Length: 504
Image (cartoon, rainbow, N blue to C red; front, side, top):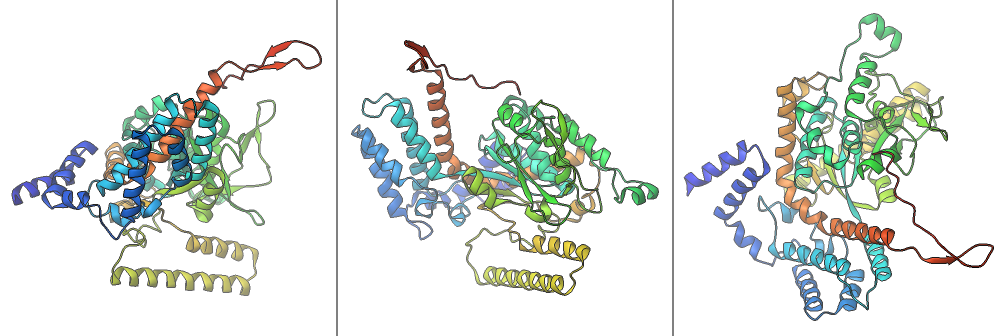
């Protein structure tokens, strides 16, 4: 048995794909008794009695064919993290999966939703279905993948995206700041069928850095060549506006930028807030780390379709300075209440705890308290310094430092790289193919232990979205209603507008 465990652990460490990793992890879970833990419904980590009761009620409604009662039951009783089934601790005991009761409950809900959507019921027509799924999806919420800054370390994000995409758990909503914006925009400007090729390390361009000579540094007031950064972005990101990218990919890409001057707030750029802005300049601005690169002017599409500057007096720079993970704005704009974070910021990963929120233990609690106290005191000292030194340049620098300290750098599910000197030595270097493959594989391996938690926690929201898309598609394809002709007798057919496919 010990030999088999050693072989499984070795396979776990050296796995090159998720299936191999999962097989080894499942074997270890079984050998260490976690199958019994999964089968046991009871636990203080979640309200197992509530979940068992809800599961029985849904099954009873389905077995008895009570469609109206099932819809009523789901409409008012379907909520994210019901009974604390999103508790991170309950996904951290076994290597793969969690309590079987939670898995069964989520699967039953998803199956019930698909049945309500696709089965004809006289007492639950298409109009009622559409209203039910719209309201339930709005009430339930959705997930987002948030990609932090990190310079070259951001290649780790590519591996994370690859792992989630291949397991069909990549959220529709994505945000990116600095290096994360490159990855998010690259994914968000491609049709779904193109994404697998894009994630091949040999298919992308990763030479983002070129040092300026001293004369150029003095003239441009920057250390790095922004034209090289622009060239690299253009090799990876299609030249589309936010609304065009959304129509092409179906993904909601959000990019954060910080103001280079005073009297401006950080912006979250997406197809709702700035539909006509171009992604390439947005990414360039989000990557413009002060000192390394000069601030950037954003570009937009005017009413005639021509490219022109957007508010040419304003300049923007690194999005991670003020809003690395824009959770509040994502909540308000996209109904997001579940955040998956891939965090690679060099100034964050050495200090952020790897244990999930809510983890127990005196040592962990003491560490969290000390960290929070130090951050609070440092932020207070910076605010005091700003009041004492009201010089505009100094105040702006202090504001940036305060923002870095005050930000939250974790989500509901967190994926971190390991801390090593090799990573820090390559923060601002152009990686060779071997380095790219190493970064990406590290991202995949860091994501694999989180895959089943992500699958379980996002399954219901994904089912709601799929059902809603099918219902809206059926509504669009159904014969249009006959309406009276305006200004005269007779009837005319009002046909629905066809989807805009110009971006494709």
